[in-house]
Image 1: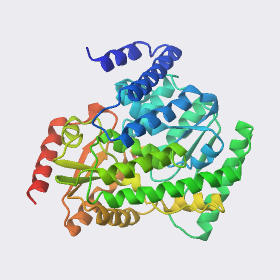
Image 2: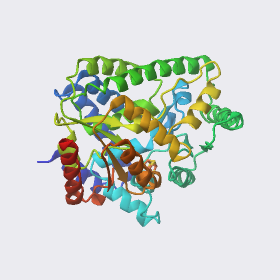
Image 3: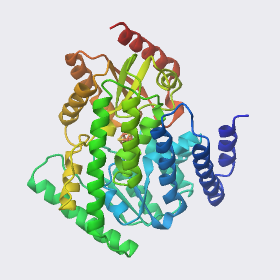
Image 4: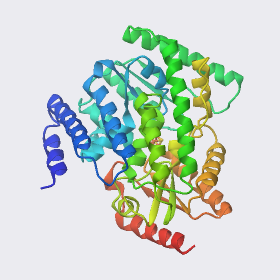
Length: 419
Ligand code: SF4
């Protein structure tokens, strides 16, 4: 019996009763957490077993305690929330879990039947569908940014209206200069004022500095990890690359995140040398796509070397004036602004990691991803690195043309292998 399918069918049958459906989803998270804590996959290095636990543990917190949570997107400056002991519910991660629970089709259909365009990114549609079904518990507020993602602002506005939530949207300009830093800094200070009012607690600025100092130490480890990838690669799966998006973004600054990267450095230093072909991804990795799973999960012939979204900011954040530091971090994120910034950063990472091929998985509905595919193709052609852009959907499995992507992936990998 397929347990996940059975579980998914039970949730689907109960979606008409929001409280029961929420309880079932909560139960799903509890079971997954216990399972990965007691029966970790023995093939994984210790760091990734730990990553599995801390990601589920910290995504469960806002689900278990919605009254102490804020909905955020991946780029939200969550250092501020961590300093105030508020739990961020990272909507892209929530939707990924719903896809893992095999109920994303139902949630997406629900969003579309409420009038949401079918061309909206499915990470957002799955979250909106959960809101439409009232299976999301009401948090205290929502925070998002204008950075990179065209879907965020509208999705957050829509659900904040529906749930009657205070919403703060951080407008991040493309240009980096004194005026834009001041502009973002002013918004961050205003946003903290709102959060303090809503949660009736004060931000301790020294606590925030402590978190940023830890964040900077963590980023040193991420840089060390990147340099090790040139020679070695971990026995891993695409899911763990996606889990790293939690630690490199929303959970950045936490003690557990720092411990994870410490362990990761130990593991990568002891990992076997790269003997197969190393493949680096742009943006996301298609962790639910069967053909990709076959070639990149626990495979020594093709090494999964990561994705650039995990390395979208690699510098230090100023901690003496934390609002200024966070403002600069947001503006200088490589996913912000013109595509040239992204290309420049990708070029640097590629020079450090030296992959044998690059894959861009163009996620359905993601305009910034599809919009940049041609520019990337030209860039990698000039660099002499094989590049494949393949369309699919990171969440809604119905949008993946397995036969077609398998043919293209296999032809690409064959070409990489012959080089
Ligand atoms: S995949 Fe693209 S559209 Fe979807 S949440 Fe991410 S950046 Fe936004």
